[in-house]
Image (cartoon, rainbow, N blue to C red):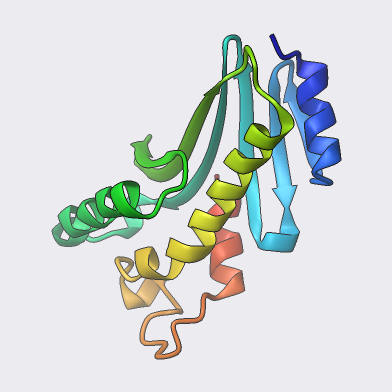
Length: 156
């Protein structure tokens, strides 16, 4: 079974800035990809990866069913691993792996999948936030605002 020391070795090998929050829990700060606050939790025999994408409170009640449908479509069509979910009135991405035979490639793939999903889907998901709370609204180019992405993820 993988140990907490081995998980730290993987994080160091990936060259990701991180901090150990408590025994078996780490917080990844990957400012390079504008993805921050990925939580890695090791509760044998499972390792869970989680990142908060946005608060549901910023989404109008009338648009929530459309948002949920979009998230389910992403889960079925675009997610390499892991899934979008709802937790404590927030949209999160979560992935879980068995830690018994976990190797570096699986560990890295899970973090990379979360990062890729955030970068690919962020702009479309932010469309569900009213223009008054979303400076990206009406942006014809569809470019994600780094400030918005950082703020949304940092709230996690």
